Amino acid sequence: MKPITRKRSFIAVSLSALLLSGCFNQPGLVKDDSYNRTKVGAVLGAIAGAVAGYNTKGKDKRKRAAIGAVLGAAAGAGIGYVLDKQANEVAEALGTGVENDPLAALDPERSIIVSKHPGYVHILFRDKMMFPFGSSKLRPSAKMKVLKVAKLLERYPQTIVGVAGFTDNVGSRSFNQKLSEKRARSVADLLSVNGYPHTKGCAFDKPIAPNDTAQNRALNRRVEVYLFANEASMVDPCVN
Image 1 (cartoon, rainbow, N blue to C red):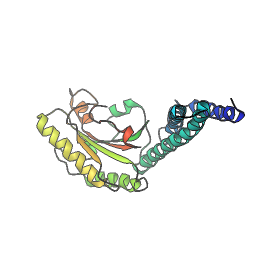
Image 2: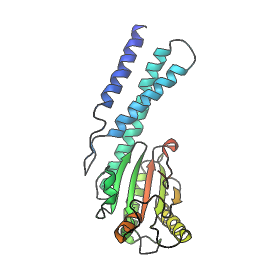
Image 3: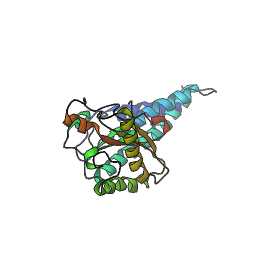
Image 4: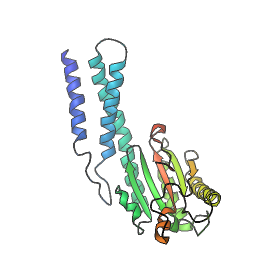
């Protein structure tokens, strides 16, 4: 192996080791300064880049793998950084914090929950602060909240936006399906600053809690907004 190859390989391995350390720190309740997605994105990018570089035709596969790892790490870190930055900005604009604890969704006192995932930022809006009962018309206060997110999206024209509506199981499947779709579109209409979002009505699929009490049914009535880094990171909100 030539000296330059050893040097680049060492850089790639060192970078991965450095970024992997501390990847699982618990995020803060108000602002997440861990930038975990930046680190994870860099590691995954380094791995993908190394594999791609090694599999290209030509001689000196190790050299190309090392170069690919460095370039992939930079690209992956860039995507992760944008997600980390977006989540903090959205949480601050909505007057809340970044909360990645899955159990937060079971807290009825939390009307808005902003969380970060490997490929997207997730925003959960409770039904009670969004719409009057059985309606798809946004309350004025809720409209202001959504417009704040829309304003932030102007800074991120490459972000792919998804909006999904969810109901409880009271009433027919047909009624709840239509209501969830209308509510998703009401929110999507305000978020269409860089193109119209992907919308989906999930009715009472994927409940947060069993639909066995009034309190649990209230938890299940919600609208979720997804800010995807790219098409590859998109998920089906009714399933995942």
